[in-house]
Image (cartoon, rainbow, N blue to C red):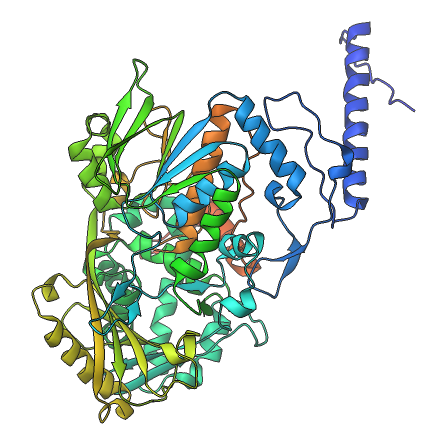
Length: 630
């Protein structure tokens, strides 16, 4: 029965008001029935929309397909897989291509062939857009180098951490078998001049405890030199971890060194562990890093959940194992991939929109591509060069502000030894090498298929970060020093001789999140109406949670950029972006308490040296009570 209207004294309720209330009640009932239907529907089915936005075509109900189960964290947590139209069947893909051809336009140019560019190009091509991806490199994801003897190497090792939900989903979508392509979850070792400092184990297979208590207890027996008292000094940073999002710019202006000093972190822990770890993870010393960027990175990769720091490694070059199938998927959707084609110019119309992308072909000729939208997915150093050479970018204030951002130099090496040497862990960090230089080494015999356990020789990848002071050294000087550092950590390499090596210098290749850099980082939407940005340095909106120099962040910003193109052009279905795992209850409660305390001026939180206002009022009340009584 419909609810009876309660007429109050002095109120005027007419027939129109009665009809309005009936309509509202009917709408609530319909919405409740819809929720009940969705809750009772089988979760293994999803329903294909009749047509992308802006189209009046209809698809047959027979296109309803069961979805495979999706494991968002690499094989353990099972949930419903986000819908992807390219995986339904050939008929759906043909329909998308037909809609793209009938739209008489909808050309998109993607500049850059990393995680962001490939992710954006793949989704847009699956929605019927005519995508052209151009990249200055000869092969996407980095050009393989060869030694003098013909051995191949890829610059840099790329790990996939637990929270890389969108990357793991993408691997499933393009049909890559993770068991054969990726290693199992691995731990790592940390070395200094004193020897082994800590073995960080995999924590996903252990009983789950609240974070960061679980990380502290399970690593308690693995530390060799650093005392428990020094490690407990890190707990003073808990409030900063909880509070930094509420005042991001304040923490961004603060350096990591200032943050740790003000919170009383042990100097022994800071110099022995934290400083070398930051050099290896964010490619700069703590004095040159933003505190907000570091807190976000550690919360995303290590502190948010007990097992976040567990990592998998690709069993071969990423450009071949992952990017190769991605390119094939883009081309199967009708997209075009053009390596060795650097961007030269952007021609704009009277409205300020990019109408033509001008590039340089591999043969040296000019390539002109008419376009409706541009997705730019290049690094900070490349944007600086483009801003200085392309007038349309130089006129945009947000693009000029990117020139204030800094980048860091890196050096990648690969060394072949004459005998096989077993190492404690496949991935390692080495401290106390060159001043302000980070160093990691990886035993490729344990990680890559190419160097299987049957291989008689040891193959080691050693990557260096923040290497501006090393660029002038010769390859022989760098390799001989690396052999000495490696032998100090793993004595088995002392008697091993180097039979071959390769050294690759990559100047200004990594974004440096320096203090105060947040105000210079651009949003994804630019003042050029049909140009959007993607990459690890942009401010994504809405905020996702994948922070720092992570491949997951690059892919997520690429998908966000693709969604902005779809929203502007009005054609296609936006990409489903998987968020990071929710905060654990204790962290969520602490954030809520902090927000409440900041909104309530009567509470002083966190406790400071002065007496809070609440206690001051109590003191005045006691004085008044004394006067009344006496």
